[in-house]
Length: 536
Image (cartoon, rainbow, N blue to C red; front, side):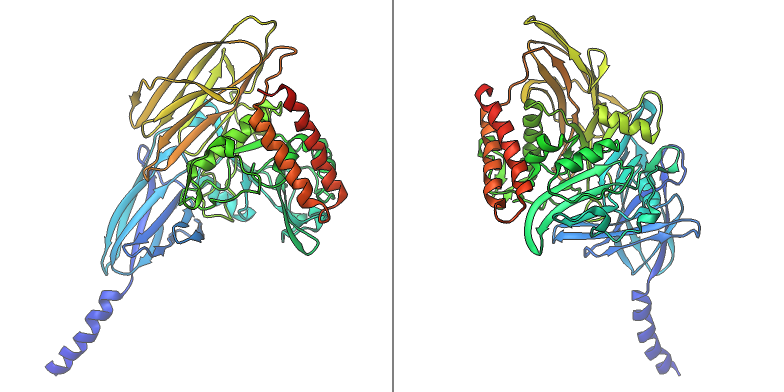
């Protein structure tokens, strides 16, 4: 009998050593102690990801698993404000909790044995932008609409614009597009998750990658805040812009590097430019060669042996935005992630809009369109100029100098490494980093006066190093000073680059795309050619 018992024990012990144990936990606000919605990732020592579920029948947990490369991975769940649980084999695990941009991520290592245990993750808020009238949004969303109530609260994202219509074939209208969406269920009305979290479900992405059955990439543009589904295919794009604007919709450029992007701006009168776009992720930078044939060599963008670095991609985006502003196209900055397609959380890059009179969807969209905003992948950057919000146009007369007074703060839960003043696309001042600290927040005041003459636009940007050494940034919308008869002049090298892009696209599209498509490139080419004689 003893020998039998001994033999049985040899089988039982190994079985117990690999059996799963239940880890239960909560994610709470460190100040109030209340359970809050949050994003949670769980990783074993060997890199294996595990996914928690809600431990409450009233709760929800949305799994997210996207990978572009061995190092470009995003795996997590977003949890409602309820306890969670997960079955884990014995071992060591790293739990990391996040909640949008205004809480400091909390990482905790847990040793799991063969018995149930509990963990409590405390998230510390370092900023409360809503208390100051600032509300965040993501204008490029590919999450399922049914997921948004959970995910928006877990990421504390105030506004989401899911692209429920999507078309990829030239000439095909969104009403017959690729997206498998029940259009009857998509209403042209905001859906409030709670009083300060809302999504608007009727938005369209034209992402043209085929002409007939032939792969031929043109690019993407979004129609946001529609009242009706559009019945127009692209190209041509000018009729789409006219129809969208009649509905009160806004046009969002998506990325500046698509083949047709720099044609869309003058032809469609595009409203929004994504200063933080869907190639900027929390995880490893991936798209290093997202170019057409025309390359902006004059910008000397940072590269490595594989192509653009993440910093180089940011520089490229900034410079194309500045070029468009200098050409007279006053697009307002925004941010989009394409969460749902790429390995990136919803709202990783987001735009904050100032609403001093309180929050509503309509006020937020109006503020976004007015440019009362800043874009961020980490820090907070608030600014007023001569006592007014950014986005405003100040009329000036004559050749006399005038004062530009910048007041605001750059804030983060880490030190800011650089604050720069941009005038007409050039860095003209670096703000001294006179740091203050309030609890866990590093505060860098901005109080800077300078003299300007002639027409000008002014913006401020700041940078910081993330925990991985990656760069995070914030960038305000511009403020404008207009002197009649003295428009801002674009740089000659930039205009020459735009002309080259149009010429190459005309050649590439002839015999493939429609004549209406080619003619829109010709129209944009003439517009840019007219800017060249007065370029600086």
